[in-house]
Image 1 (cartoon, rainbow, N blue to C red):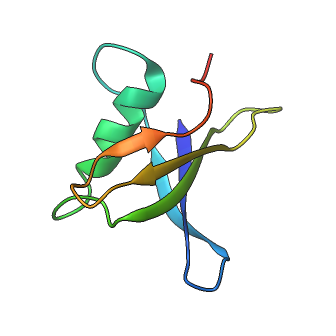
Image 2: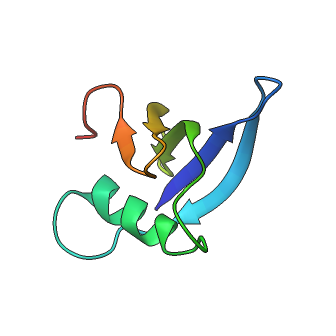
Amino acid sequence: MFEFQREGEDGEWLALGLSRAEGEGPALEGAVRSFEATWEGPLPQGCYRVREIEPGSRWRFAEVNGAGSFQLLDEPLA
């Protein structure tokens, strides 16, 4: 299970929701696909952060470009 947040215009992080990893491949990729499926189109362009809902997990930062592509900006989740 992963938690997603998006950076607002005021710099505050806005909670977007939770997503389970689905399908094959790395857990984060499956969670992103599942999360994107809840939107009525591509994710809005901007800065995001995501973390596993587990003790000790840390936020990972990502961005969504104008085409709606979600890209992790730091090292992949283990």
